Amino acid sequence: MLTSIFVTTMLAGTVLKLWLSSRQARHVAQHRGEVPSAFSSTVSLTAHQKAADYTLAKTRFSLIELAAGLAVLVGWTLLGGLSALNHLMLGWLGGGMGQQLALLAGFVVISGIIDLPLTLYQTFVIEQRFGFNKMTLRLWVLDLLKSSLIGALIGLPIAAVILWMMAAAGDRWWLWAWTVWMGFNLLLLLIYPTFIAPLFNKFSPLQDETVKARVTALMHRCGFSAKGLFVMDGSKRSAHANAYFTGFGASKRVVFYDTLLSHLTADEVDAVLAHELGHFKRKHIIKRIASMFALSLLGFALLGWLATHAWFYTELGVQPNLNAPNDALALLLFMLTMPVFSFFIGPAFAQLSRKHEFEADAYAAVQTSGAALAAALLKLYEDNASTLTPDPLYVKFYASHPPASERLARLVA
Image 1 (spheres, rainbow, N blue to C red):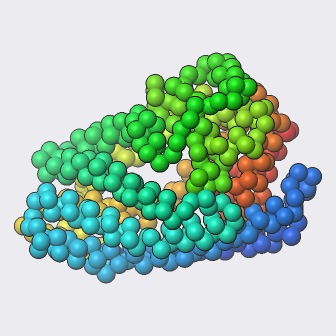
Image 2 (cartoon, rainbow, N blue to C red):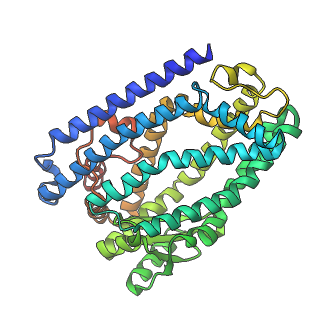
Image 3 (cartoon, rainbow, N blue to C red):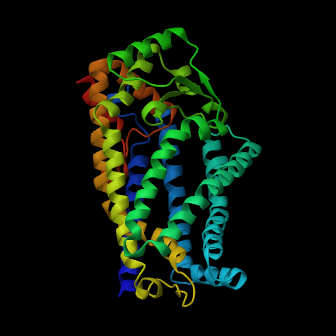
């Protein structure tokens, strides 16, 4: 029964993704030859066509990713890949915590190797073709090694704790594991800005006194405090521009990409920062964390129930262990299959995210200038080659941010 449900849902999701991507590609291509009238005086045809070509390239690449992802998912589940890896680890290590951690690590390593060609193509072909990639192969390899080491140092201990709870904490293990998982995520929010992010990028205190004074005044006016104002050397990896807040509580930092500061005026920087402040003032961050708490609790509870049923394994192509724990198998099988089902609730979260973006825009327009934010957004859309003519249905299903036409129309109204 579960096999039929899984296959039907997987195929339905694949067909829907193909249909949405074809709509997106067709809509963008049809509008490639002319800049939308609302932007005709501010966006050149060359920039508009670059954005269209970049979007089309990414959309076509997403179809390759979709096909590869589907093949890998079926390989791990129905074709027995996960079961084979598990039995291989059992033969080497026997049952116990070591075998389970080795199964998790082996899965991550193999999955990473499978993803490597697509990741390299995206970075060094697509991003390179459109002038966004600034990484050398050496830097890319160093990033991969550092992220892998950090992932192992952080991931293996938390995995060991959760596996121990699954074995030792009784029927309600999932509640205790959820508590540990949430505490771990909150801890990451605290330590990431200070200890992890600097391993990949250089963060320098903001030196521009004019911008610093304006930003400080804006934050004071909005009742917001941060540990510091920093400029990140994003240009050594990408030409894309951005600004963001990171951290939690007393560890909050304001971070500007160096590419952003080089493209925007002081008024526009203020407006972009005010937008980010709007997310805090409208409690979007707290709401997202609360949503993450609730969804993860539901996920752990569901896993706690599924892991006790043999059909959960056998119906998805996995032969459970008879004389050894199945906890790592359950974790991996749950992680592999749940996205197949959760895909269909994605539009609800995308809609909520777009609503939050509109609210943050409105806050920024009051605190600074709607015209300045509109000008900044237009530059960011152009600098990041974001299409001005996305398919409306594709936007409703996927987009976490409203399209430029809707955002700018509200700001200049």
